[in-house]
Amino acid sequence: MTCVINVNLPTQSYEIAIAPGTLDSLGEYMGKLHLGKKVLVVSNPTVFSLYGETAIASLKNTGFQVATCILGDGESYKNLDSIKKIYDLALENRLERSSTMVALGGGVIGDMTGFAAATWLRGINFVQVPTTLLAMVDSSIGGKTGVNHPQGKNLIGAFYQPQFVLIDPDVLQTLPVREFRAGMAEVIKYGIIWNAEFFAQMEASSRLDAMENVTPELMETILKLSCQAKADVVGEDEKEAGLRAILNYGHTIGHAVESLTGYTQVIHGEGVGIGMVAAGEIALSLGMWTAEEAARQNHVIAKACLPTQLPDGLDIEAIVDALQIDKKVKAGKVRFILPTKIGAVTITDQVPSDTIRQVLQKMQSGS
Image (cartoon, rainbow, N blue to C red; front, side, top):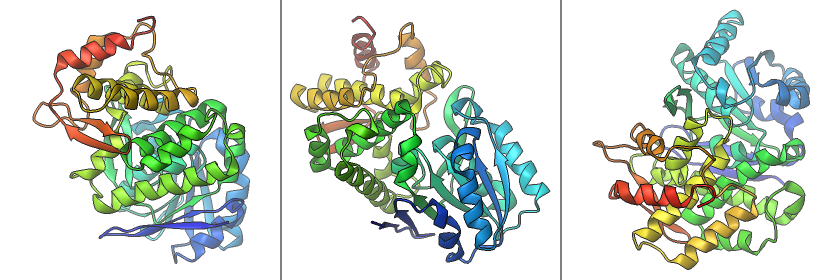
């Protein structure tokens, strides 16, 4: 059953189509957008070996001229060297302003392809075809694109909206279980920041740790409500002037942990899980929500088999220092998104450093 969600923006609105078994209709969807005929599909070896042939055949059957760019798999490749490879192939294949870059992959591929599209010829068309749960519910929507700097995550980037997002849930059947769990972190986030009823549905599920342990009905709800929540927030605040910052719940400390572990030991969704636990504990220390609510959140995070403690050997002072180069720092103060109840959060820069340290010490393995 196809579900279409509209992302309504002043500059460029677009549709998200959630439609099982429709990857082979990518060309048909893109044909309706009246884009130029030249397409560069950007992917990684794992995803391309599974789905590249289907996507390319669909595009060619609709009359598109297709070139491909295969980048390394993982966050460690999310850098300017990879962007240069996309530029080189864009030049080699004479992409024009009417041409399109298609991101076929997870959040890393989506972020890099979007940034390349935003900056090639000062902006060409861009279509997202997310293949991970995390990309489907979060990173493919809203136009945040970019790459990492060695000292921090996503410090180089642009806001650049796609023309269209095609979500085919069937591709999740091949998603590794660790990546599924990482995606569930972003899903749980929406329940905490935006939709208490959605959180309660996840709470009622006995397990959230693998695709086969989530009912088809709940999976459909997860995709629809997560995408709708992201679309609603982005529709109200496209460039993070205010409300959109709540989407970074769990990301402040999460990004620091990812960065300090080299983007390999802890993957993005795992960092968000750790960050949500930390944010919940900070909120509890500051009297912003109850111990019962913090326990409910942590129980659902644990149901998805996400980490709730810091990795072994991570220096707390290094985390505190890393927070200072977070994108949300304003006038030298770190802004945290903290929960006030299940379904609502607030943004504050009034978190004492000692409180952060105490919470991180509590979250050290073995504490």
